Structure formats: C-alpha cells, structure tokens
Image (tube, rainbow, N blue to C red; front, side, top):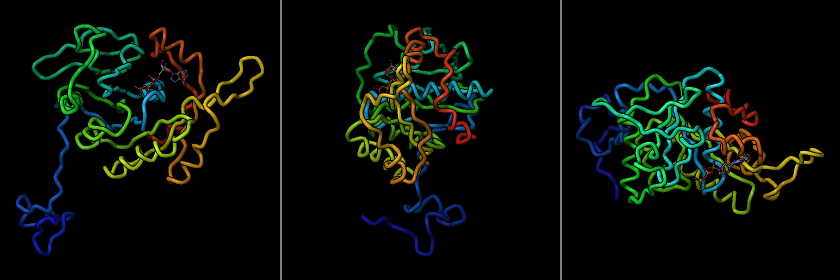
Length: 278
Ligand SMILES: Nc1ncnc2c1ncn2[C@@H]1O[C@H](COP(=O)(O)OP(=O)(O)OP(=O)(O)O)[C@@H](O)[C@H]1O
C-alpha cells in the first residue's frame, strides 16, 4: 500500500520539513540507544547463511587480531541458543550488574565478552525461548551492557537470516558485516542470502571469509580440499565483494579452543582484514 506523503517533501529532507514528526513518509529509526556507559567506535557483525561454518572461530579470530593491534575490543555473543565465545576464552563466571547496567566479563587478553552463557545458572542450561524474546535479549546486550570505551565490538550472530540478525541490523549501529562460509555445495545460494539481507538492511558487506578451505598435510605440505573445491572467488566477483581470507582447518586453532585459551591465539590467515576495519 502506498504511504501517505505530504506533497513537496521527500523522506530524505525530513529534518528541514515543517511536517517532520507527523508525516508518515518519514523513515522510522529503530536504533536502540547504547548504554550511557558505552562508547563504541565500530560495530562489526559476523554472519553466515547456515550453521557450522566456524563463524564463532572467525569472530574470535577477528577480535583477537585487533587486540594484538592494540585496540580495545568486545564480543557480543548474539548466538543465544548456541553460545560458544565465553568457553573459547575460558570465561565461566557470572556477569555482574549494577543499577547502571551489566558489566561484560573480561578475558585474559582484555577482550570484553557478553553472552547468555554468562547469565545462566548453569552453562549447560538450554535456552528455550521464542524468537522475539531472544531478539530482545540481544538488544539488551547493547542497551544494558556497560561496554566502556571500545574501538571494535564484534557481534557473533546466529546462523541464517532470522529474528536475531534482523534485530541486530535494525537496532544496533552496525558499520559492516563479514560473511563466513565454507567450500560446499549450495554455498553460492547461502552466501547470497546473507549478502542480500545485509544489502536490504543497508549494511555494508566488508567481504567474505572462507573457513575450512583446505587442510595442509603436516608431512608434505600438500593442500587437501576436504570439503571440495572452493568457489568463493567466483561468488565474490559476482557479488562485487572482496574475499578477505581463506582459513584452513588448523589443528593448532582447534587445540587452543579445546584448551579454552583463545586469548593466546595468533591466527595469521585473516591479516588482510585489518586494513578493512581501519
Ligand atoms: N579453521 C578451523 N580449524 C580448526 N578448527 C576449527 C576451524 N574453524 C572452526 N573450528 C572448530 O570447529 C568447531 C565449530 O566452530 P564454530 O563454533 O566457530 O562454528 P559456528 O559456525 O559458530 O557454529 P554455529 O554457526 O553452528 O553456531 C569449533 O570447535 C571450532 O573450534
């Protein structure tokens, strides 16, 4: 249905319009206010069209890289039903709050983390909430958490294009998204879904990261394409975005996650991204 619009004005010039506030053609800003104790310079979303591609691994790797560059960094774990960030960093305490809001937990390398796992009585408690409740909690991680001064806040999104990514794109001032994928069948369609969602929401796509690209034989150095040949370069070209990195299956990274010591990780595969964030 066509929206009523005052003649002679356009939504773009609302601020100087005498009808501002009453005109239904005005674009509604659904952004939620950050907690007054948060000054976040850049919000970067990490998304994937489907689960299990190593999105949390990429989120934590990006965060870690920026910490290594001397930036102050936070991770908002928006993967409410499958949170994995705190465990990767060996953070198991309960987040505490004051009247002004919640304090994020701080990992050994200074990364600030907020995740539903830091609020549950037992980490193994399942979160059995409806979509809108989950989306509300993610918004509260922005409005109620006192992030302090951050250069970068990375948002680890749940896979897919459901309620939570929609809420994050609408409610948080996301500066850009990184799309994570793996070299498998249907990858093009899945990447395009994530890409199209970001585009529809006017969020810049910073580029694509391919995870599980290959496995390097420890004896002869040969690269084995465990999940088949990569098509990421063709997809990136078609969409007009950059390939930011290709990550192999790296047993060292898997081990550091297993040991819950991601604060010591040194992921060299995504270094090209640093310039993208500055
Ligand atoms: N490149 C890699 N090398 C070795 N292990 C990896 C790599 N990427 C991810 N993993 C491991 O694979 C498992 C799944 O990764 P991760 O939790 O990042 O997936 P995810 O995409 O966030 O999952 P989901 O989207 O389903 O929540 C983890 O144990 C992680 O440590």
